[in-house]
Length: 279
Image 1: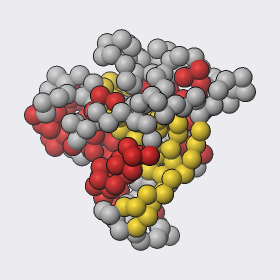
Image 2: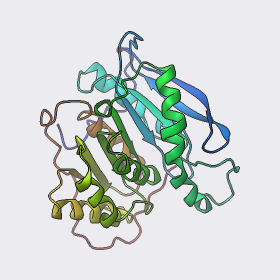
Image 3: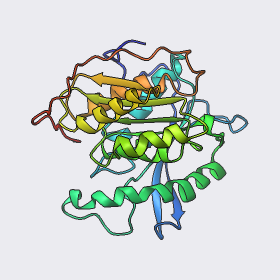
């Protein structure tokens, strides 16, 4: 793998097959309302085939559309699949704000609602996807990731449920990310270890501390993981690039794809500023 995506990796290529995006509505007993998610099915989706599935979370203040409007998840996967660099997969992008309350004027006030997504994801959304799409339901074919607040969700929920998700990651994870002394023992005690544990962040992102500390904790515990430092702040290009690299490792035999070398550099010092934004 290259250590950074090529210049044209988010450009729509007219000469290749395209996946399909659709917005679904499912009943959430956990939250008590109907909720929406965006689903990407790969090019030439065939219901006679069982596909692996990636659950992909957005950042605070966003919604289920942000991975395909703010970021370019569907275009990245279309291009990777056309180039045979990624396994054809279904991507499910939920609304990470798990509440029946309408959004407030101050989206930071919604911080705690994002922790409540876990039961909705496991007990409501995943059963809906499994009954409406042709997905493989074993842990080896299920992945969980996200950016910013969604990165914290991906790592927290994924490590909490290693028996459900074999492929786990977080991009530029926000301060909702749990501490290493919480997450590392869960991995150590799990019967089945992650097939891929990805921690990525921009090297000038002032939210890097949580990702850095988890990386150090995993290193100390000798737990295999990918620590990928991009060059950038808390911004869309970092998340698109991380997805481009992460997706190429998903659902493939362990060791068959070499993890990318970091593009950036970080020494553990606090970073002032550097919180780019979500658009």
